[in-house]
Amino acid sequence: MDTFWKGKTAIVTGAASGIGFALASGLIKRGVRVWAADIDAAGVARAAASLGPGVHPVRLDVCDAAAFRDLVDGVARETGRVDFLFNNAGILHSGKVHEFDVEQCNRIIDVNIRGVVNGTLAAYSLMVRQRGGHIVNTASLAGLVPAPLLSMYAMTKHAVVGLSSSLRFEAERYGVRVSVICPAGVDTPLLDEGAVSVTGAARWRPDVRNYLTLAGGPLCTVENVACEALRGVERNRALIIIPARARLTVLAYRFLPGLVGAFGRLVIAAVIGKGEEKEP
Image (cartoon, rainbow, N blue to C red; front, side, top):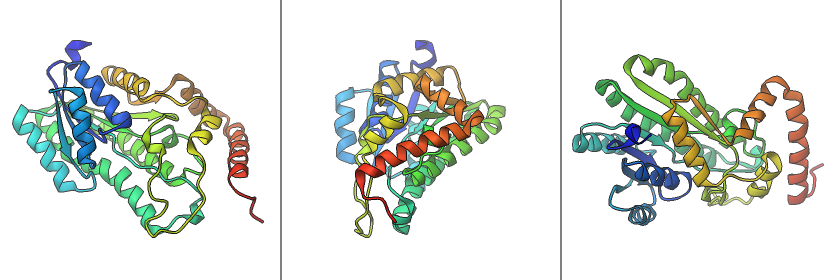
């Protein structure tokens, strides 16, 4: 659908690597002018250079509402409008909730929820005025079903799904579309967590790649996720669940929650059993 994309403008956050980079790459191939934003200035500059002259790298901390609005307004001034905002930036913290500290919880809330809110507030008001546009938020399958050992992450992604699915009905009266991407396990740098704790306290963490593979099968590639996501955007899907087998998980949890819970407990036992001695 080249006519759907060609000549339009998009902002993609978290674009230095992973799904964000793959989304930016897919958009460029479809003829979209892309503003690739990331808190990693050097990384997003390298990413933009590898994608060609149609990409404009921007350093952005999505937690900074004023900076996000400046970016959106700047793109609108330069091009006349913003057609797509991909709120993709996010972080992951894994482990058992009783070992988390407040600072770490605040950080994942700031990036994964407030970052999406900041982008939505900045772009949505503009899109209402221009009577068109599409906001695409990256959540997760963990925003639709339970994800123990990823509880804080799942909390933030449930919030993103709630915002997206609710705003979609408000936005349609102004010609604005809202979609949310919910991928299952994806092989992305997001799985390579940074600091264990803001305060430096040591705690156990699972092997997230192994955990996600046990729970849901082989990890998706970022390229496949981006391709499916952009196809879903073209079709104006509300929930873009990737891959197809993940839709079965959602249906199973809705209609057979006990079965899903029993399977989840087996996975958790296997992962924790490999990572530590069982607690008394």
